[in-house]
Amino acid sequence: MREQHTSIRRTLRICSSRRFRFLFACVTVFSLFSLLFSRLNTVTGQRTLSRYANRIPSVPKIRVPTSDSILNDFRQPVNPLPREKNDIFDDRSGSEKLLSVPFSSALALALDEYRSILPPLEDRAPIYCYHDPAAAEDRTTADAESDLLLTWRRAWWAHGFRPIILGPADALNNPLYGELQRLDLEPAVKTEITRWLAWETAGGGLLSFYTVLPMGPEEDPELIFLRRGIYPKLIRWQGLDDGLLAGSQLDVLAAIKHVLASSEPKQVKGFLAAAPTERFQVDDMPKPIVYYDASLIKTKYGKVNEALNDSRARGLKSLNLLINSHLHAAWQNHFSDGIAVMKPLPEHSTHMISDARQLAVSLSQCSPSPMVNSCPPNNDQCNPCVSSRPMHISTPGRYQNISTLYTIGTVPHPYTTALLRELRKEVDIPWIRWNSPRDPWLRAATMGLLGATVSSAIRVVRFKEMVASQYGTAHSLWLTAEKLIEEDKLKDYLDWHFGFAIPYDQDRGYSDPGPGRRPKPEHDPVDGPVANEADLALEPFLLQRARELHVTHNDVDGEEGGDRHQAVAVRAAIEAWNLGDTEAWKFATAFLAQRIVERLEWEKDESG
Ligand SMILES: *[C@@H]1O[C@H](CO)[C@@H](O)[C@H](O)[C@H]1NC(C)=O
Ligand SMILES: *[C@@H]1O[C@H](CO)[C@@H](O)[C@H](O)[C@H]1NC(C)=O
Image (cartoon, rainbow, N blue to C red):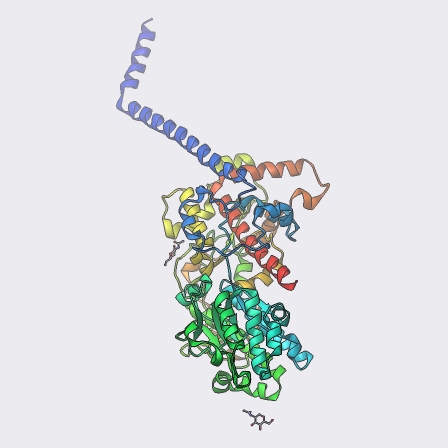
């Protein structure tokens, strides 16, 4: 009895001791926190999941309010142009159409799932070029012209326009065509008016020659004005002659009628001379637009001029190379701080970012040119591309928002991240639950912008801004680590994304000072740690394993079974655990796919 009493008394004494009270307080606080966090998780989890589930097929362009601030960047243009039938994201065309796009089914699914939260594609203002293929004297000239037209289309597409080639058939469809034929005009003037008629048939907008190209940063105010697609009057520009014109259909029509009504057709020396001056507004030479006309070529680009004098076909080929190299050089000059290939998890992602790195290397080289070291016509002070001193390429761990630095990101699925981070062949659910960090990739990537304390939800919003805002698309490109997009399709798209033919296998060649004299590459601490050989050797295998997770049922018909179920469960678990990383991955994947599809669909329409 006595013994019992002492033991009770001792227990009581322990309970009232200070240390015990402290312990008790800790336990209480901890359990409260756990409760709160598990609550929070289910809430954010539900919100994200419901967003996936919440597909509203009949009204796809509705603004889903979940993406908060980022949507500010996706304002519809004030005066939206009529959407064309090729708008595949209009849902009536539905998912069959999406799936008919030749992608792996995993990608098509990701795109389908994400359509409702992707920013609507910007309407592209049309820019027309009148071209009569029959006018070329021979086959090689025609080929050279069509190469130039490709360069022209690519450059304007990259700058946010919808480049369209018009032909004699468009002029023929104009009701005024008959009237033109009846007039007794100089042949050159007749061709000129035919060009205007085709433009009028197409509905007005911008009319350009294929030697007029945009060579300025996306955010240039004059390009922004042109992209808006609304022109109060007929506009011409000093120094561009009739190389670039802008105007609404009504104004174009009025000008044509005025010229056709001329009392002495034989005296008409040119369209612009005969057109009513009061309808025109003449603006200063726009800085970001260049026009390679005969006099410019003669004064500045002698080699091309010689080639032109020799034969038109040879000259146009040479001019095409020159223009392409200038477009590339203009891009390189704009991004004077070089290219950042993002590497947020630096220890084991060397292999994962190798495609991005390879692309950066290609972009940093010089395009072939008949006049190496020449500058674009609108920038005599440029730093010409010198192959011994290519653009700087870094591999920083964090996104840096510098306007003269181009970022190429590689976004991994959280499963890929897990395998590579841990150098594990596989992961299981208990490991995910107890040992894995949440959203490691997104956290690292946005650390520079947001610091260490903010939530994944905020990071995701910022990440979407990095990828998809107007500023983002002009300053960065985001690939995914799992190669869901076929390589040739991606390569083809990239030329249109950047607006020039990327020199993939350019020989660094002649100006290499030789191995002995080459400066030793110094390791820049910004580039993160260097992986050791043994780990590096493991990466390709692990990455391959990670990619296999995204092979869907359709792609591997018949191979069912426990493995598959296991993989699906692990995938679900890892996605639920890493909501931020998953969302970033899906968004980046779908965004890139959307861009590629936009272009493919447009090309299909164009070729028709
Ligand atoms: C063009 O070629 C002709 C002969 O074919 C030659 O007389 C003339 O000097 C050349 N012009 C230039 C600018 O090379
Ligand atoms: C980067 O900076 C620009 C302005 O310099 C800003 O408009 C943009 O929102 C920034 N992007 C991010 C992701 O912070």
